[in-house]
Image 1 (cartoon, rainbow, N blue to C red):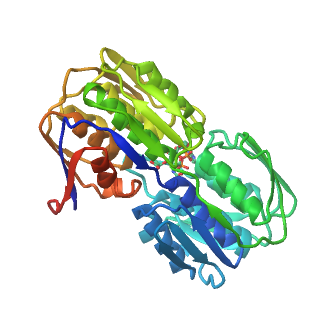
Image 2 (cartoon, rainbow, N blue to C red):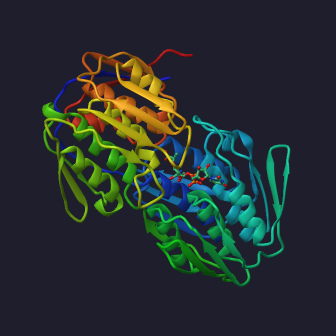
Image 3 (tube, protein in one colour):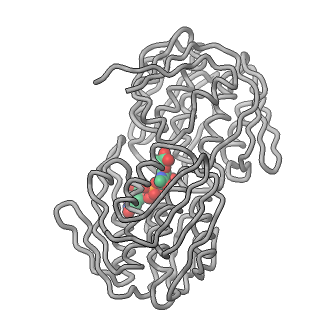
Length: 423
Ligand code: EPZ
C-alpha cells in the first residue's frame, strides 16, 4: 500500500484547479439506470470510488468508459439487478442502485453495506422510504431483496435528513405512479444536481434545493448529458491547507470551484483570521500569521460539513487557544484524533465532541490513514509539522482526492508518494 512522505514547513502558495464532486458523480452514475441510452457525465473526477462504482455498474451489464474527466455510460443492455457484497463492501454509495433498479425493472438484490471506518451507518431510511412507495422488501442473508410491479407515489418523512436516502428514494419515485412528497429532504448541492439531472432525463420534480420535494411520477425517462459540479470538500480541504500554513504561507487561489457551496467554511476561516476573496468560480485565501481558536459544530447543508470536521481539527491543533469541535451528523467520526496526537497535537474526544488545545508546533511522525477525510487531516498536519511525516495507507485518500500530491506539489509542498509496507 502506498504512503506519502511529507517534509513539513514549506511555504504554500499558488493556483490549482478543483475537480468534479465525487459525491455528485456517485449519485449521477446509478441514476442512468433509470433509462436505456447513452449518457455523458463531464467533469467526472478520476478516483478510486468512481472506479468502484464503474465496476459495480458494469457487472449489471452497463458499458462505461472514462476519458480524462468525461464519463460515457451506455445503459441499453442492463441484464442483472444485483449489487453483490464484494462490490458494496468497498463503498457504501453502491446502495444508490437500489432505487433506480426497483423503479425501472421492478426488482433489485442489493447487499447491505458493511460498516465503515468510523462505525455503523444504517440504511433504514432508504429501505423504509422505498417500502412506502409500495415495494416488497425482505432482508435475507445480508441482502436487500426488493420487488414491485409498479411503485406508487407516497408521502415520506425522513426523521433524520439523509443525503443517500433522499437520493435513493427520489430515484425510485420519479417512475412511480402518482405523486411523491419527501419531507425533510437533504439539500446538499450533490442532491440538487441529482434532481436537476433527473429533470433533464424527463422527471417532474418541484422544490429542488428545499427540504420538501414534490415528485410527479412519469412513465418513462431518457438519456442526457451533464457537467458535474465542483467538489466542495476538495475545495475546503485545500483552503485549510492554505490556512494551516499560517505565517509561512502565501496566497492560494482555487479555480473551477463554487464559493456558494462553502458558505459555512468561509465564515469560519474568516473567523480564524484568514483573508478570503471570491469570484464566480474561484476563491483566494491569504492566511493570517496566527490562527485563532474557533469552535465548529457540523450540521447538514448548508451548515458546516461533517466531511470537513477532521480537517478543521487538524487546523485547530495549531490554533492560539482551545476549540471545541462537535459532530452532530456522525457521533464517532474521530479516528483521525489518535493519529494527530501522534504528531504532538493535544486533542481529547468525549462522545461526539473533540476538545483541541492549540500547541505551537507539530512534530513529524509515521501515521496511519483510517478513512478518506481522516487521511486528508493527516496530510494537512504533515504539511506544517517539523521534520518528516509518513502517512500510510493512502489508498483511503485516493478514494476522494484526484492527484492530491501533485496539486500540493504545485502549491510548494514537499510531498512524494512511495510504495508502502504491505500489511
Ligand atoms: C453522504 O453519505 C456522503 N457520501 C458522505 O460523504 C457524507 O459524510 C454524508 O452524506 C453526510 O453529509 C456520499 O454522498 C457518497 P447520510 P450518506 O445518509 O448519504 C444517518 C465522504 O467523505 N442515516 O446523509 O451515507 C447516518 O447514520 C463521505 O465523501 C440513518 O440513520 O450520509 C448519519 O448519521 C463520507 N439511516 C446521517 O443519517 C439511513 O438510512 C447522515 O447520513 C441513512 C442515514
